[in-house]
Each structure stands twice: as structure tokens, then as C-alpha cells.
Length: 203
Image (cartoon, rainbow, N blue to C red; front, side, top):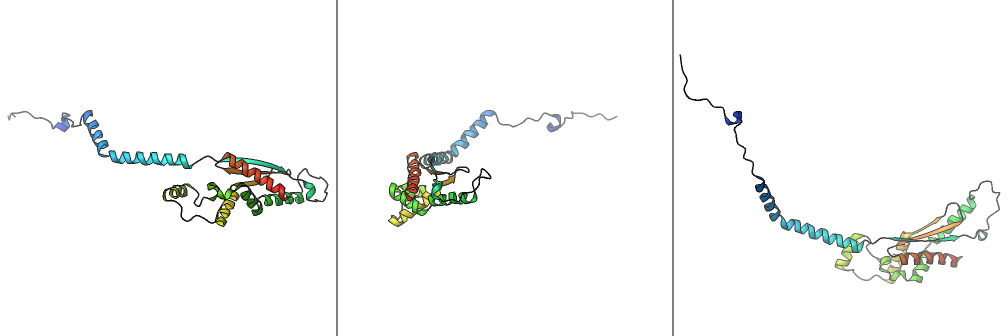
């Protein structure tokens, strides 16, 4: 009979006796501090850019204010034909007459009268060459080129006025509503009232 001498042992991975080499928590914190220290300037750069961009947006982006004015049309000036009131709605003839008055309010003639009255061609908001954030940022950083001529300033003011003006009919009535939005509440009210005055003067 053979006899074996010595002892037989299982490998560490089978016996469960293998020891893990995970670093303690202090090493993780040390690695994190080292990573943050190495990337400090990148974090700092992002913070500076974000702060500068936020401050610029606060200065550049201002809320818009909308002012409205209402006009009541004198239908006697239209010389509309008398029609029986079959329906409580406006007739096609009277509706077309009201639409024509809206076109008068939006006309270039009214715009020029308002611009000259309020001297809007001298208002930077109305004659800005590059609207939007890009134009405002780069325009202020690098400055503007040659100053625009009087005709160019007038045309820019007219386009700005046309783009921020809304003229509409109030329901099916003979009332017209004029709305104008601006970064200044005072200027918005001035322009809306000036448009209404110019329309009345031309009637």
C-alpha cells in the first residue's frame, strides 16, 4: 500500500483565500485631488468664460415692452352702400375698407412721419446695423465702420419700425389696434401714439 506524504492545498482563487488589492478610500481622494489640481486651469477657464458670457447677456438682452393704441374708424368717410343687416357680421365691402385702413397705418408715409417726429433715425435701437447677439457683441468689441448716411439711417429706422409694428382689427368691429414693441417702455408708447396721431392727421 502506498502512502502519500505532505499536504495538498487548493489554489488561492479556488479556496477563496485570495486577498484583494483595492486601494483604500484615502487613495481615491488623493487621486481625485491630483486630477483636480492638474485640470485646474481648464476649470478656471470655463468659469471665466461662463461668467463673462452671463454678464454680457444681462447687459445686452433686455426685455421688450409692447404699447398699444386703439382707433375707431369713422365709417361715414368710406361712403359704404347701405345693405340690410342679414347677419351681424361685417359686410365684404366694409371689411375691405377696414383692411385698407390697416395698410395705411403700415404704409411708408406714416412711418416716415413718425420717424421725423420722434427723430428715430438718431435712436441706436432703430438704426443698429447688426441686430442680434452677434452684432451687438462684435459691434461693441471692434467698433463700427463708417457712420451711415442720413438716408441709410432713415431706411434702417423705417425697417425697424415696420418689423416691430403690428396693426390689426379688433374682432369684427371698426376698431383698429396699433401695437409697437421696444426695449424701452417709454419709446414703445411714444411710437404707438405717434402712429395713431399720424394716421389721424392724414385722414
